[in-house]
Length: 79
Image (cartoon, rainbow, N blue to C red; front, side):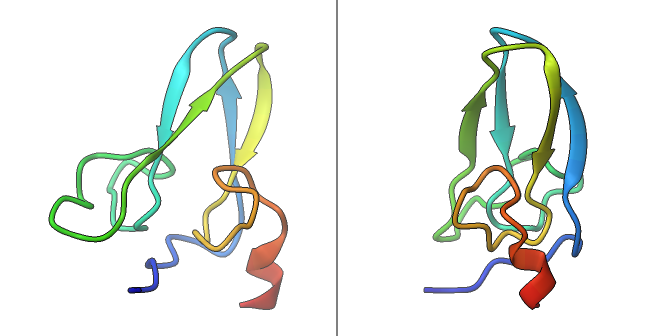
């Protein structure tokens, strides 16, 4: 399988709104990081949905290697 492009080696802090869905970019090519803009089309990648249960700050993975995607698990520290 093709490796995703590392968009950045740190997470994206995003204020999310309770009840709203967010589509995280898994390929790393989106110009609207950390969210999908359709750049994955024609590849093996698909965006991953994140459903906000509460209004808060979450940290979306920027390196695209998190085992807890779409959220950061610190994997960027190993790249």
